[in-house]
Amino acid sequence: MMRRIVVMAFGFVLAVGVGAVFLIVSALLDPATREAGFAAATSGLFAFVEEDVRAGGWSDPLATFGFIVWAIIIATCVAPLAVAALIGEIAGARSLLWYSGASATLAGASPWIARAAMGLDRAREANPLELRIALLFFLTGALTGAIYWLIAARPPARQMARPKPTL
Image (cartoon, rainbow, N blue to C red; front, side, top):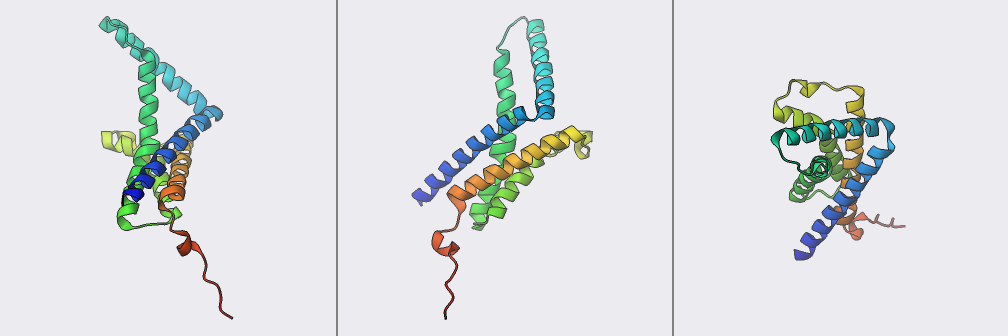
């Protein structure tokens, strides 16, 4: 039992790490995502600095940017995989389709889940850039789920082997 918990934790941490690296690198390589991310980061950074100056203090704007990146990684890599892994372990699922598909679906839907949770009116709308970012989140979720399955949820080799035909 302890070995299973260690393997699951190792698989989870490794999958989240690879997913976070994939998310950041692919977001920087895609011109539209990079431009949208840069615009959002600069506007958020300037709003934070303006609020800090008005309040009379000067906090670290890079810490705020780091918090935003951390929140995106939690919403696209950690939370979807945690839900998929928890349900999969309780149900005894050993399918790549379950871990990768559930994690990808939850990660891809995370912008709309967040909007619906906050009660925003635009919870059902999306523009092409949002769909492109949702696709990136979907691919990140699929990657994290597949890596977790490969390390922690794959059925034993004796179950995966095909039975030999008898002659």
